[in-house]
Image 1 (cartoon, rainbow, N blue to C red):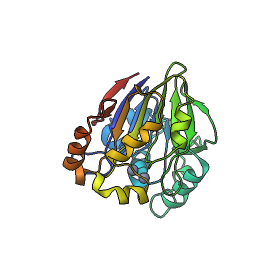
Image 2: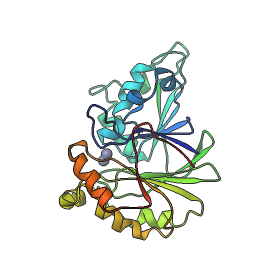
Image 3: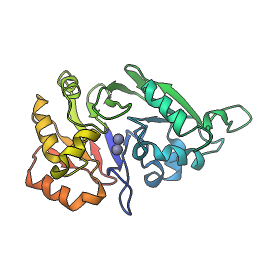
Length: 254
Ligand SMILES: [Zn+2]
Ligand SMILES: [Zn+2]
């Protein structure tokens, strides 16, 4: 499996892009940086986006990819998530107020739409990959996903605070090759991480003790640019051997 990091931070600043991963050049997990990191041709070819939750840093480029690829040359872009998350996106983003409801707009005379929704309650197979929602700990409606190509399985937690469920699910996966998760705030802001469903370096170190397999690599994203230097210092002081910090446009083969 090949994973390209389109965005790996918790906010936008020059050089910093929000959460988005491209898997096997076929589907994306989250839509924070589809347009700032994919070429126009790549945007035209993208057909599948799985959303973890409706916070703006994870969905904002759904708005702009519909504009950038509004052409008869593209196939419908399908947005997948658990029903509650899709409901939020319909009601609060593509609601004909914040942005047009692109599911109602034909891209050509054939009646084809630029945007469609697909609810995901359990495992689905898309572009040769099996994608399954997993419970996480984040305010509002949110999910993580496991993505499997049959040989390897990768877990994307999206945003989450400390949780038992996600690690107990991970412990049941025999071919888990990597975890993509988050650290958002420095340890001095542990109180904020706990109320907002995020990790600090120490919170994640503690939570990872629940993962049985001690050698599975854990890739870290979602540092807030405001606390970047502090977070990098704390992260490397902990010397977390299994954890690797993600950078924009990193490519990981598993
Ligand atoms: Zn986020
Ligand atoms: Zn969030």
